[in-house]
Amino acid sequence: MNRTHDMIIIGGGPAGYSAALYASRAGLDVLVLEKMQPGGQMAVTETIDNYPGFDEGIDGFTLGMKMQAGAQRFGAVTEYGEVTLVELEGGVKRIVTTSGEYLSRTVVIATGADPRTLGLEGEDDLMGRGIHYCGHCDGRFYKGKTVVVVGGGNTAAEDALYLSRLAEKVYLVHRNEGLKATKIYHDPLIRAENIEIIPNSTVSDISFEQKVTGVTVKNNKSGEERDIKADGVFVSIGRKPNTYLFEGKLDLNNGGYIIADETTKTSLDGVFAIGDVRTKALRQVVTAVSDGAVAVHFAEEYIALEN
Picture (cartoon, rainbow, N blue to C red):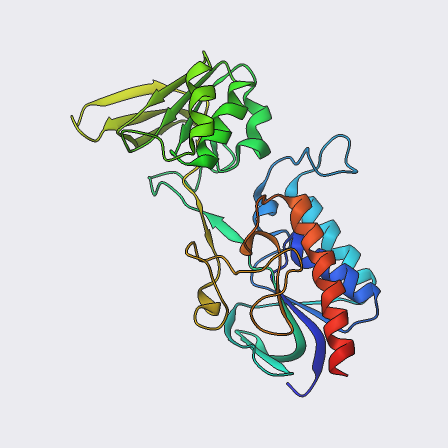
């Protein structure tokens, strides 16, 4: 408790460990607080093909461990425990976790965002075995197969169009009469010969053996149910940022994301938000890693000015 770190990073995903690497390599005293395991959401991704430097792809768990090892090589320390309280104002910030209390001159928030789920039986167990939450991450496994995309917003429309270039058949299931996605997506969706749009409907059940074999779709108006054989289901109904600890302490947008621009600076001096938890256009491993490097640049600047 008496020791004051230069930087505490909350979250050990790609953004967090990128920041830890850059900060520790720059000679800062860095502590990473992680409640589970290195890698965050990335750790449950079977294969990552779009991260530079791995020409044959790499599984998310291994990449997470490598990122942690890279930061630890330069002296970054990881403590495991769940953060329960943050005090972010002033020159020294206080972080309370289930494993102890810590002080720091700067705090980098890398708590990520979890995909919203359908809440159906078996969904959690089928993650990676037919249930996915990122079309661009896992779409390649469904070349020439049949998939269902659930959602009616921009992400669902993007996923459906992307998957239509790989899969033989794409069903786009959404609960409303019309898509919420911006109009720029409507014509391409209609023109795609292998996309079938199913409006006013929800997925009420998932069929599976060892992996997904299909879904049951229920019409919200008539109550009629339809069974669809499918090899995979992509749930694209949004994400929920892990920002409950920061409500009333930092500026958040209507979606609950921490408001931070490309500098990663938040509404409080010495506090930075990186990766999926901040407001940004694209949430991918490579953009999370970029955020980590940027945050350290401005954190060093802040520490120098404070000293």
